[in-house]
Amino acid sequence: MKNFNFISFLIRFIGSAALVLSTYNPTEYSYYSWVQAALSPSGSGFAAEYAFVGVVLLIGWAILVRSTLSALGGLGLILAAAFIGTLVWLISSYGLLQIESATAITWAALLSLSALLAIGLSWSHIRRRLSGQVDVDDIRD
Image 1 (cartoon, rainbow, N blue to C red):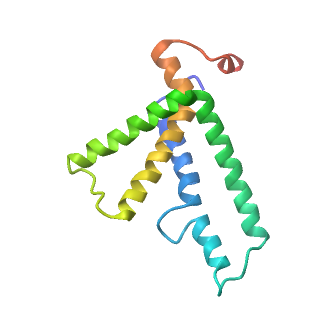
Image 2: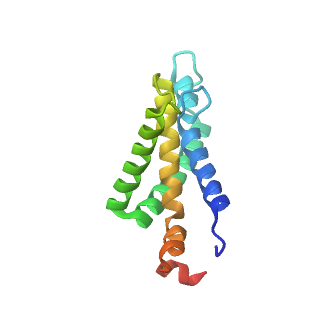
């Protein structure tokens, strides 16, 4: 992708958020809640559709985590997580983000994880823009 811009990053963020939030979120609309309801005493029990969706989510996680680790490396991952964490802290210290409830903290953490994955998916493009360096994988484009 030669024309990487904010919309390109936003698309990656939305995709990452879709994976993260469909896996777990504080509402009843997530894979975790769906399986938990099925496994409850009044539930239908674990069936093939639960396993299938779980495998699809696992594939998505494997792709995003592997891409993020490959792009950022261990130190980059720590630095990106520290950047996002301190940014959330800074925003909340100015009163722009109210994180006084466990639900609000959960949402902040889930969206922060989504941002971290989106940064990992976008890092090659961002680094190329900043430094002019091209990754070996980019040569095939």
